[in-house]
Image 1 (cartoon, helix red, strand yellow):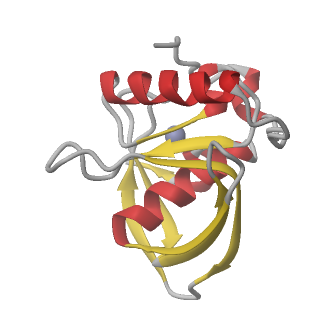
Image 2 (spheres, rainbow, N blue to C red):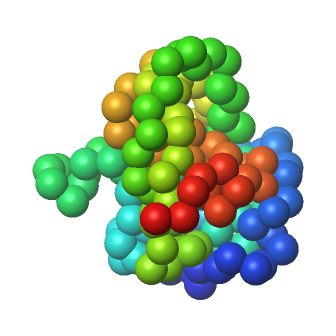
Length: 151
Ligand SMILES: [Zn+2]
């Protein structure tokens, strides 16, 4: 596990740098991020939230209700999004005890790489779209304190 960084830590406001080396250190970072996310407990975690300003996030939207379904995103890009949006309640492991109403696209098309550098592309909808968009924002230094409305 790695210590979480909280609102007020400047690393959360940085634009994270691309990953260019797919090595054991990257695999270790991702493993530690999952351990930290599940322990928190949360459904998503971006590398800046553990103080690493790199373009990596992990998501598991369903482990609280069903079998774990861990997803790893390295160098993600949002290549398309729905015009239609929906407002939902979001929390953030870096902003404990608070929730925000945030408007998000109802689907997003993403490309990303895995731990071996292999490229993937997929559309995410519903809670997966919300989680992916939330974590993607972290890589650009965007927090729900900026994009949402306190509840
Ligand atoms: Zn967050």
